[in-house]
Length: 464
Image (tube, rainbow, N blue to C red; front, side):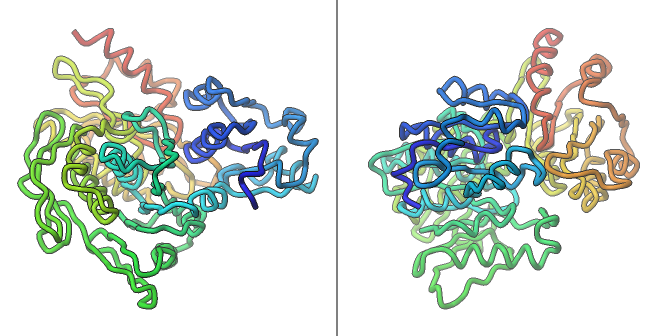
């Protein structure tokens, strides 16, 4: 496929975070871009404001005529996300009409193959690390083209472009084994929890998937791996392995002299070439210090100076829905986070306990996927029981069909030792006045983000 010859691109599931970055990329090249998504969101509305046509009804008649009239490549490109259901009408129509459909990961791989790609994989942490690396490269003057898995507050997008930089920054997504379409110059693995078992089946197969990703990193290059992850690359790749951690001194990269500075932190970063002194971040959460170490390590291997590391991390403002402080006034704090795995919930709760010691912590959680809820119900219940109070919302199914006996109540019945209640998303507004809010946390990967603005409005009207 020759991307330069493409004139029009149609996206099935254009509102996804990865799909929308690709849509913006092709739009920046002057291509005609259109797409379908199930619901209108702030992200799809932003795309529409940028000149991208989107409809919200699964109806083949609404596919632009310019697309259906020009069936063959190389002029017309159809991109879909594996998250769309297999019985989707438009998907079936395009398949039956003989169109060649391409997965998002395939196109991302084709685009980034012409760059020196810095790819970050992991079941959690990868969005923050990729956004931090992007900011470091921008501030250092190296620049990059970046495809992010979240909206960076610093660049106000999930895409940044450079006509001159040789670097691309890519979030390497393990879902559907998408990261096996990439050919990175440098790689980083942040975590490898049991997740997406609907795809991998079991944990050893997941580990093999990550191993396969590491073995796609350019021969004779380098990979940075979080300490303790059981990853052994093929010796024939001749990769230099580096380890990182938050503050364990037996790793190649780690933080030293960590001190809280407002909601952020100041610290030094130990590297194989000596310490980078006086690093300051403005994003909350001790996990973001670890993420900063990972980002710095990859940037250093790409040739960024110590001053470039410092300026990039100082400029980084965080990303939407990752330890996202939406309200902070008069002793009341509201944080929104994408956490959707027990280990991610543990990390955000621990970070909030460190940041706001002694404060009452109320959590609102929306489970995501039937299969994940089935597989980790006990783990979710254990971590949610570390809150001081819980509101549990209805399960968000996303791409999945119901599984008998699996719903939010499966988790609810195992939560212990704290006040708890269940409600629908629509009922939440009526429950807020009954809460004694000190630190409020919304967590989940579904459409719980639609509650954030109403919660902020409620707090603005009711907190003096």
